[in-house]
Length: 396
Image 1 (tube, one colour):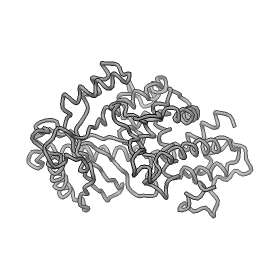
Image 2 (image 1 turned 90 degrees about the horizontal axis):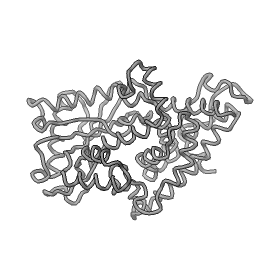
Image 3 (image 1 turned 90 degrees about the vertical axis):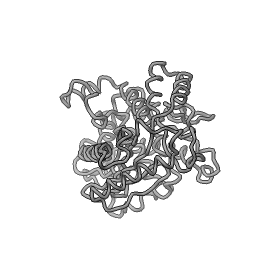
Image 4 (image 1 turned 180 degrees about the vertical axis):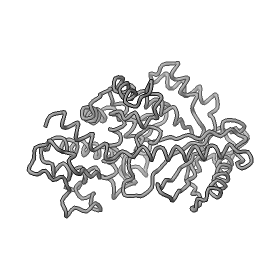
C-alpha cells in the first residue's frame, strides 16, 4: 500500500472520530450563555468580580472526539473571577462555594433538571436535551505576581524565549481543589493552572504546518487562520491526538483508571510533531518519537507552560504503581504502533474495517475504502463482532 492510500485510510478514520461542527457551536453557545448570565449583577453574586468563562481542554484545542460508549459530551470550562478576590481574603472553599451558588441559580433559571455535582476541582452541570453535555466549571482567580515571576523564570530556564515566557506566565490562574491541604484556610498556596497558556503553546506546535494553515484559511474564506475557531484548523497534529486518544479509550475500556491520561498523550504528541502536512507521516513519526521524549527522570512529562509540573507525577506514587500507570503507558504505546501498522499495511478491506472497529471504535462504511485491493468490496465488521467485547483483541 502506498503512502497516499495510507493517508486516505487515516483521514477516514480521523473524520469518523471527529465531532460535528454543530456540537462545537452548541458548546460555544452554552458557555457564552453562562458567561453572560454570570455578568448580570441582578442574578449572580460573582458578577461584581468580573467573571470570565472560557473553554479549556479538548474543546479549546480542537481535539474533542465523539463520546466512547457514553451519551454525553464533556466540556471543560474555567470561570476566572478577574478582580476583587484574593488569596489573602478568600479561601479556596469560599471561592468554590460562591461559584457553586451561582451555578445552582443558573441551573434553576434555565430549567436544567439535574443538580450540580461537586468534583475535586470543579462543579459539573449536566444538560439533558438534544445534544447532551456536561460542563465542568473550574473556579479560579488570576495568579499572584510572585508566582507569575517564578513561572516565567522556570520557562526561560527550560528554553523558552523571554518575551514568550512573560506573555504565557501572565495567563496563569490559581484554582480550587478540595484535596489541597490549605483548601479551607486562608493561604497563598493554591494549585496553579494555565489552560489559556497551554492552548497557546499547542497552537504554536500546530503552526509548524504553515502552508496547510494558509490553505485552510482560503477554504474557509477568511484572511488568516486566526480568524477561525481552533477546531476548524484541522491540522495533522489535532487529528493525531484524536486518533491516539480513541485508541487509548478502546484499549483501556475495562480499566479506565489505569489508562494514560489525555494531557500526557496531547503534550507528547505536540512535542513530537514536526510540522508534517501528511497525516500518515505525522502519526507515524509521532509514534516513533514519543518514547524518546519521556524523560527518564522527574519531571517525566513536564508541563510546557509550568516546567515544574509533571503531568506524569502519579506514575511514581503508591496509587499509580498499584494500577501500573507507567507500565500501562508503555504497553499502550507499543500497541498503538502495532495497530497503526496493521491498519495502514493491509490490502484487505474487511480486515481494515474490522481493525478500525476493534482498535479505534470507528465504523468505516460504504465506499470509504474504495481503491484498496482486497478479497472483498464489502466494508463491514464481522457479524459475530459485538462492540461490548472491544477489549478482547488486546489479549492475544
